[in-house]
Every structure is written in C-alpha cells, then in structure tokens.
Length: 482
Ligand code: NAD
Image (cartoon, rainbow, N blue to C red; front, side, top):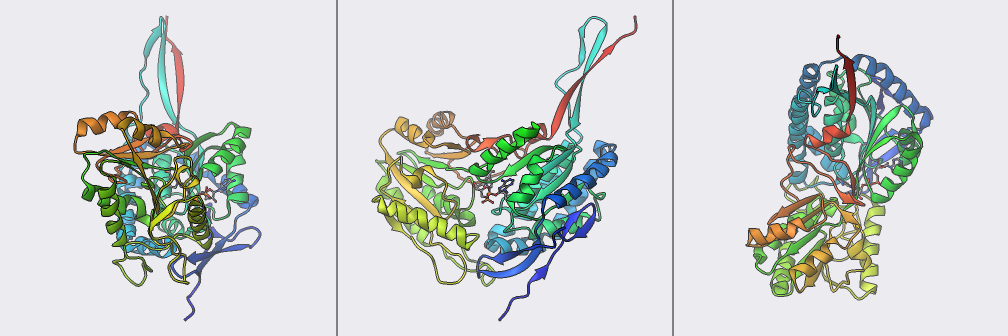
C-alpha cells in the first residue's frame, strides 16, 4: 500500500512559500523508511528573505509591552493544548516516538510557553541608583532583535518551544530552522500561530544545515543563534559566528553517567536505566548512556537491569500505542549506532543483551547493554545517540567520580544511593549541568535550567536563566539638574 506524501511550504514573512530554487526535501517515517512529506529546501536567498521580513516585523514587535507579549504567548500555549493530540501524533509519526513519549510533549511545551509569558513581565536589571554624585544610573534590559533557533530531530517541536518561549517573551523576533528530518510539527505549529502572531515575528525556514542553517549563522543582522545539536556542529557554528561576533547559545551532546553507589537499590536502578537509557530510543542528550556501578553490587544491578531492558517491546508506534521503544531517526543513524557496537565488540567488549538491528523495515536497533569496556573506549567516550548503554564497575566513590567526569561532555548525570547525604557529596563533585539523585532524565520543569558544561555547550534553556541569553543589558546614565 503506498502512503500519501503531504506537500508543505515554509513560513516566511507571514506567507507560505516555496524555496527560491524550487527544490524540496523528502521527510521519512523512520518506522517504515517511507516518505511521508516534502518540504522546501531553503537556500541563502530564502534566509535573506526571512531576515528582511524579520527586520520589518521587529519595528512593530519591539513596541509591544510585556503584557502584550504575555497575552500572545498565553494564546499560543492554549493553541498547543487544543491541538495536543494532533501535534503528538504527527511527532510520533515523524520521529518514531512511542505514543506515551509523544503525548507528554505538547503539555510540556504549553507549560513552557506559559512560564515565559510570565517571565516577559519580570525582566529586571540588578540595580539602579546614584553611584556618582549628580547622576542617576539605570539598567535597561533589552531584546537583541532578530534571533535564530536551529533545532535537532530528537525533540523537534519541544526544542523549538524551548527557544521560542524566551525569545519572544524577551521581545525578539525569531527565525527557526527545524532539523531536515523532522520539520512537520513546527510547520503545523507555525500554521496555528499565524492567527496569533504578527507576520515575521516567528518564521520557519526548512532546509539543510548548509546552506540554510549556515546562512543564519553568518547573517550580520541576526544577533543570536541558539543551536541544539551535535558538539561537532556547535564547534563549527562557533567558528562561523565569530565572523559577526554573534552571541551563541549551544545545547550540544552528552554522555551522561549514572553513578550507582554500593547501597543503591538494584531494582530502582534497573527501572531508571530502562527509562533513562532507552527513552526516545536513547536519542536524548541526557540519556543515561554510561552506568557506573560499585563492584559490591555490580552483579545484582546488571542482572536486574538486563531483565528490565529485555522487557522493552520494540515496534512501529503507528500500529501499537503500547510499544516501549520505536526506531532511531534514520538509516544513517541506525548504521552509526551499529558501527559503534561493531567496533566495541572488536575491542573485546561484551554485548550482554541486544546488539544489531530489528527486522528489515524501518530503522530499528535492539535495546542494547554493553559490558567489559575500558574507560578510554570509543563507546564510553563518544555519544552514540541510540538505545545503547555501557556498564562499568568501580572500586570506590572517588574512582566513580573520576570515571564519571572523564569525558569531554558535561550535560547531565545521576547518583543512586539510599544515603542522600552521600549522594549529595558525589553530586557536588560531578562536572555536569544537571545532576539527579535517585532519578535519571526526569523531572524537567520550566522553572529549572537545562544546559551543559565543557563540550556540551553553554547557556541555558528553560528557567529565568534562559532570559539572559535572549536579552542585553544597557546602562543609561542621566545627569541630574544642578
Ligand atoms: P546536528 O548537529 O546534526 O543538527 C542540529 C541542527 O543543526 C540541524 O537543524 C542541522 O540542520 C543544523 N546544522 C548542521 N550543520 C550546520 C551548520 N554548519 N550550520 C548551521 N546549522 C547546521 O544534530 P542532530 O543530529 O539533529 O541532533 C542530535 C544532537 O543534538 C545530539 O548530539 C544531541 O546530543 C544533541 N542534543 C542536545 C540537546 C541539549 O539540550 N544539549 C538536546 C537535544 C539534542
């Protein structure tokens, strides 16, 4: 049976347009490998068109009061709620997310928009006053102007939401580029949002990293690029953005350790790995991809974890709402993950469960646990971004901390222990932007920041900290009357 392929345009200056070249890109369903949509393949001229429209939009948008912006963001949040099921189904189809994963995203996006609606009215400078006799100083916290968001494929609309909430709340206009594999929910959101936002305030340009993303990064009139993507992409963007001394917000890769101390409950750990390592097929920058276990409980924890991971059912989310795990995003990603496994086995690692593809249709990888790995092994040091978890043993808490920190990433980590004081002592020494205790991956909440250290990037998503990324601080100094 052939599947219908939907045709889409992109959203520039309040209008739905083709790319200037007329070129398009195919969008696939990763569970079947079949094309489901075609979207424009934007080029440099299309980005130029979007920037021009953004410039015009900015003239009006910057006059809006915080209250105006709050009301518009609240209306956007309501729209997401009203269309939650539709958006979640579309995301499930385009990313291969199980229904129980996809359905939780629209409410989280709506909550985030509401948080930033409130934040729009709470922008402030640290202080103002008379610091020099005869003068009053004041702080103006201003938007940057035109900002760009470049999104990944693992949480397409969710990550776009993390960018557009603070960007618009702070008073910027924004151009967003979804990942080439997953543009559909953002295009649908823009369609809904056009009833609410003035033309040019939110624009969606669909296209490849180069030239479309690259043109956003190099454009002199764009004052910030917020990227969620791979560390290699972040480094490239940082070099290219330097040409226009552009501000950057980089949410990059991760290699999160789950540190299991000798008094942890094996059953709780096993359940946490099943979620933390395999949620969204492990395509999560905070996935618990490295399980570090005290040698005193190693055998019990590994046995419980294998049993728990083997209970995951793998399948097409479109045919069964109950599956535990879907495919990875593409044939390329599937090959990349399998390549990591082959090289690990060549280096004498043991595949304890899983390993290999599932079926011959779509891009599935078995939920996999790999043991007997050295700390300097590729599979321990590099982000796999698939349903693969390594297990290592340690002799002391100090050794665990050293192993946990011994990667170039610094996004997220967790500690498992029945003794919270001991867990907190370890948490303080972990070099990661988020540390969970007796949990991994959840909860995320709009009030708390998400962002990495080291090669996981800099800047924060969510929370009032992310308003710092999207605003600038101006000192105005006034001479008082004699
Ligand atoms: P990617 O870096 O390949 O692509 C991300 C985006 O960057 C895409 O939209 C792509 O088109 C664009 N891009 C690529 N090259 C570019 C260039 N030269 N100039 C401008 N834009 C360019 O990443 P991905 O494969 O889509 O996403 C997976 C990665 O994202 C993983 O490494 C993951 O860890 C990371 N990630 C991080 C977080 C976080 O919060 N830190 C969250 C989700 C995903």
